[in-house]
Image 1 (tube, rainbow, N blue to C red):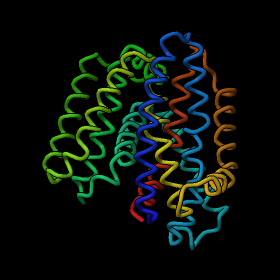
Image 2: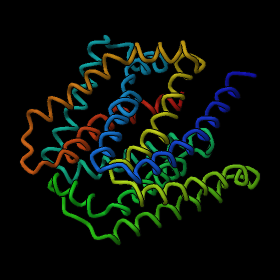
Image 3: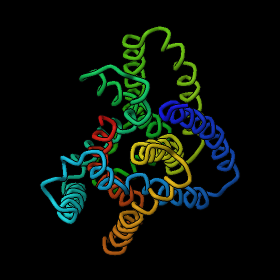
Image 4: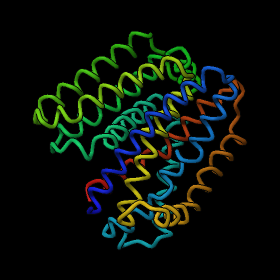
Length: 303
């Protein structure tokens, strides 16, 4: 079996495991307290979630050497950290603008991770397809928890939205996504991917409407984004996913992972949070580290 087929087999196996883990997470949330749900969600995000974006500079150096050939590793690190800090400052001073771009970037990023192996159309239609998928996922989470979402964005100084804004956004994004899917893929390919996609949307609907906001986000972010992304990154860097390559990835990403967690801890301890709205600060932090990571993943997938 060649490496590409083996990697696809690993992705398919991971998908099956994630379906089971998703329902297990939902079952666990049925008797867990709110505090326990938040603890589980944050542990998952601070481990696998942050880890999957902690190796960006190494990925650039291995897969896009031309990007780094005129600069030292230290200079590139400074540029990367500067981008994160600029994003954080924009969130602090222009939260509405930053929030809009965070959702746009995240939507595209989620869609690209899920579909880049299965949807081969080129040009703007490919980017729109990725964006609509991710937007539908985010709007479904927002719709299921619109009151709490409004509280979170209110903590950033952004006006709240009615429930209809999230529900209409979800249906428009989902309809647009499936229209492109049907119009751009051959029928044979559609029959191969459509049953699983419909099953996943049914799973997401059930989970997001029954789990809390932070657990809903963590379930999707970790199981359906971070873990497949880690598998892709390790395969791209080392040619295969196995115990040895996984350990190599952990060693190369450890420093940046610790720096990211340290940055969040410093921000939490130094920024005044009189309303106790940790989620607003937390999502601002995620947004700040998302922008450069999305760019790196686009370069990785293209190469």
